[in-house]
Image (cartoon, rainbow, N blue to C red; front, side):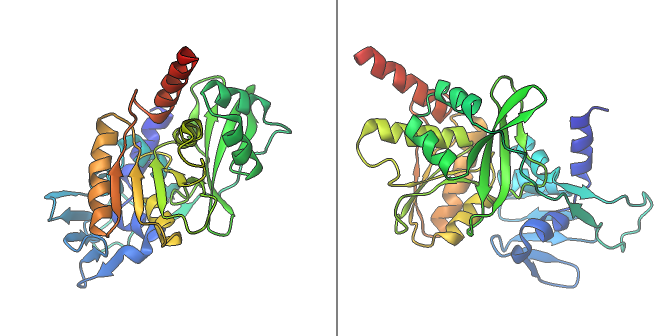
Length: 311
């Protein structure tokens, strides 16, 4: 069995209760001795005895955390596996009875990869992807972007921090090959954030990947219609509600949300789910997929070509 298949099998053994108790303990509301519901969805019933949940309002259900993440939180399958791989279930007996307590689990400690002395390979790679030097300098100087070496490969490291500025998550992207993935132990509620220049900013643009968020910032810089740091840029590291919820909790002044997800089926489906969820909470939501290409980096590269042709 391959490593990825083992990750899938391990993720299938994680229950909805384990996931919520780890990442969203405040969501759980006990209704009876046998049932829980969630604060966000009052019609979503969880039964710990059999590990099942059912969301009556949407007529969907399941029996593990993968089902919950994909059907309720709108996350794609790969992102769900990455998130759940940070939770390591302890061995349990195959013959466990229904009354057996919820399986225990541990969360891998988070530690940033060692930083290289410079960021030459990372900045060269990102400039090749169209990111402006100004945006790159800000990210490097803010400690949310640096370079690390893994074997003979140089990787970009995109860092997610908490409200106190402490790194809590990180995503790596190889400068020379196709490798990409979360750093072990990353807490997915902490997204990659380029904050607005003013604390009173009321607008956030939300992207799937850090490079897309940096592309959006670069596009605003090139358009000259507003200072490039006139809005917040948040990258989720996949299709994941958690960074959105954490960001909005920490920024109560934000009222306007632009959803800048990929122009593909997962991105469009996730946009519908998030837009509805945020609108119900009183936010003014705008659906702004890339005008050209699949994602905002495609859009940026196409825009740069057009600018070069005009010149």
